[in-house]
Length: 139
Image (cartoon, rainbow, N blue to C red):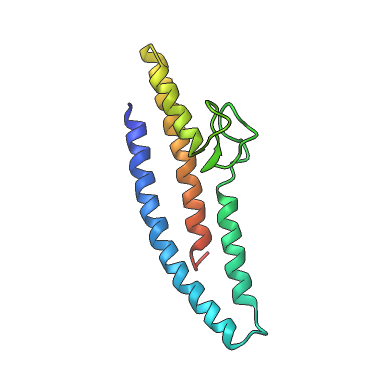
């Protein structure tokens, strides 16, 4: 596979670690908000903010263009595979692109499939980056 795929995997791994660390911080803030709400149940602004951010995370993983060959499947992480509509897959766009790469016969087909893999990895990375920005305390 090309260097674009390796670069996207590297960036995806970095963003996944950053997302994990951000979720730990967010969880601490969430626990503090729950404690504050228990002390003063008439002020629900902090709880509302937590809920809005959690719903925003779900929105980050919706791709309006859909996944390739299945535009009706818009969720980046969880959708049906083009290969098997009865089985759900994680990161369907990425794994379908990998399957295309495996089936490619010529070097041109492999190069295009590798480009598709890199593109799908970048979509996942963008979604994770959106989720990180949604969870951060500072806009």
